[in-house]
Length: 315
Image (cartoon, rainbow, N blue to C red; front, side, top):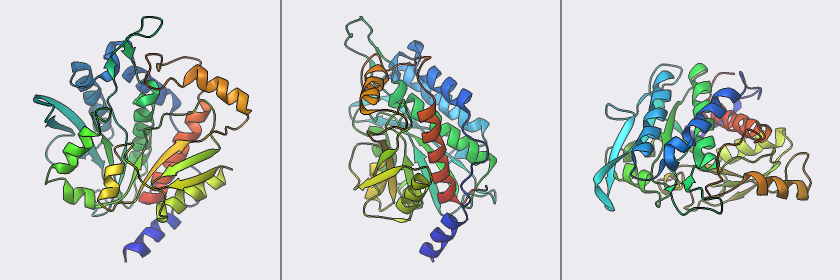
């Protein structure tokens, strides 16, 4: 029965044309705000980290999201490392087309924290802004939530911004260890992770971490990629992102990682773009007005198509 339902939802996702496309102005504004110098890198156990959590919770509230459990989208927790300091995950659910929170849930996640203030680079900059890691993925996830809210599916969408990912997946571990959340995790039919940044060009090759062993959502994502002329390779789940933990509950997961071939780029041009824009865990990972939007737009559209197909959202 579960397999028949899954296949039916995937089939009703066709045709693949999106309802409205990603809202580029919203995505870039939210990402820029989260990665601003005033946010001081959204560092662990800082007021700015809490500000980021509150901003994301407020955006979800505007969309009509509800707490998945308890009475707040902001989910407080502490860690053994800092037992006196409360930090927040952001976990919300957008109801299905029926207006209810269905038994079968689709999830999407991206971590909200970054490294904060650290060692200066050669320019003296000490703020690790985290634009690609992961302010821009945060904004792409919110755009998926926006589109789902306007065209809900047969399955409810759970949006999860976990905290302290950079400290060793501490936020998702705290959430999963709460006995009240374990049944919710097991109700997930599929979880999509979005934490691998965004390429400066349209990637045409991708790794789908969690796509092996193959499951229905591997086939869905692969079919959508092929429709764009992209290729994918699948790998088994590994603990490089919050989404990994859901695979430990037996939930199918996918974590897309951009590959080394980009549309319209030679290998040399891609290498130059990577050098210019992709500054992983450096203070220079910050918003730049010349960052190309095309790659993010294509990635954001694919994410929506995957969620739309997995949830049975309206065309």
